Length: 234
Image (cartoon, one colour):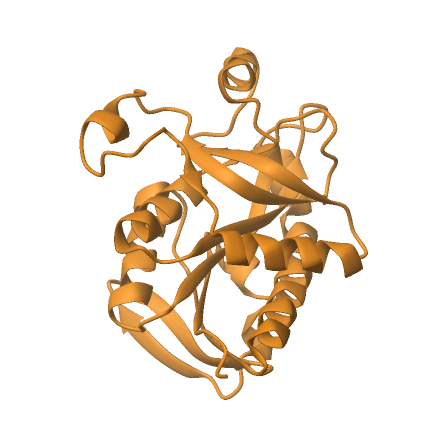
């Protein structure tokens, strides 16, 4: 059985960079001012891109992956900010569900796409593969809630988000990509490594730790792809 074609979506070029040498052969295409890299990682067909920061950019890239490259699932890789005190620097956080932390609660439940709650749920098959990948992964992997918004989280804002959502991590893109996958009925999973925490917070910590965290996220996604490839074998 042929493995699913996977879209690998990152926010920044630093987050995408660890994947690029692995995509062979690599065809490059330009769409909507974005660059897409298509080929195989091992036995798995992939299309990879960095969207730029913020949920709208992530949404644009995700829709192109679905419409033009016909991916059958999207994996969001890269970095995130830790929110739960238990989550440490360079831990991987897999989003079992995600939500916007800066959107009125009824926007997506009372209007399109009329969701049953404010949360986008991870695909069950991808999540199961991620749990298998975590068992053989050398680093720490957490499973729980991730929230998305348009700013670095510091001070009192962090406390309010924790009170409302109890998230493990926060970023600027995951829910945007999940939103697009939800309305297109495309399986989605996010697996990001932590660059900053309540003890090591802010953009300076992100800049210092981004490259290392991106490599860790890449390593976990590779293990995830291996689990998906193994499960597709007859």
